[in-house]
Length: 326
Ligand code: FAD
Image (tube, rainbow, N blue to C red; front, side):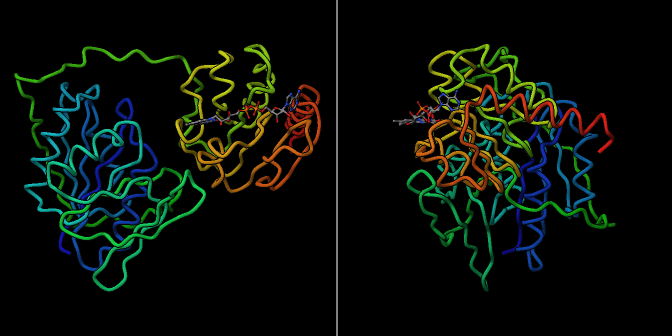
């Protein structure tokens, strides 16, 4: 292996933390290979420089208005050119909305293998192995990545990001985007639902509500608790289907996959499809009035009770801790 490329995950011109996590992992498995980071977007050149603090050997940027919103064909063409130039053996991308869409397109272009939603990567001799969930997270497989190149999408919040001394010989190279006039589709604008300030997939703490929340206004106590904790708010699909909250909050097999340090599940039964999105959280707290609810099987701490009584008590306790300077 000679070259590893890490394609940074950028949202609204800002690098997401998973970008640093991927660089740390790439350096760990490099064993002499060169690690090059590629950052695509608009007005990204300055924030891209942060990657140097994580030890990348080279940094390539493509800063262009055509990359401000996700245009699949422009991104594919631009990345393809970069990969052809670098002759990358392993390519890391985030398992984010954009790269979940891009990774298979790129892998198909290169007739290459793709391991997606990877939670661990190791190198054993010359082989690279990736661990990824199967059966909606019920089990994990460790797969050997064969062929060249190979693509990996990495689940955010799973790997460590370790700042290291900047490589003094690191080159920062500005590249052009591959805007084509014959695009099959052109994204003109992206309308985003107003969701919480904290990005769910990168959140350290998530307060999540299910059908037990009972209504849109039932989410208010969850938002109040989340505010005290600096947390993001998530939801089960049943809560989204019932119209209590936006689908952008859905966690699970067909929603977002999250790995926070703390996940507080309120009025969520713990269906397998929900667990697929959150069972890797480091600490799970479940609040449910049914002591037999399956969520208690995966919870580290369980509170059997009415969430409308329990959640405000937690919020008040956190508020009084702040008043007392704790
Ligand atoms: P319920 O199962 O109805 O549970 C509500 C819980 O709230 C109960 O345990 C109840 O005891 C408790 N409760 C009620 N009132 C209170 C109260 N006042 N205080 C405390 N507790 C209370 N689901 C997802 O979440 N994410 C997915 O991505 C997803 N993908 C799916 C994909 C497929 C193909 C399919 C078939 C299903 C999918 N589902 C998904 C749906 C999943 O099977 C469940 O239906 C869903 O997760 C249930 O949501 P829930 O736990 O909020 O609701």
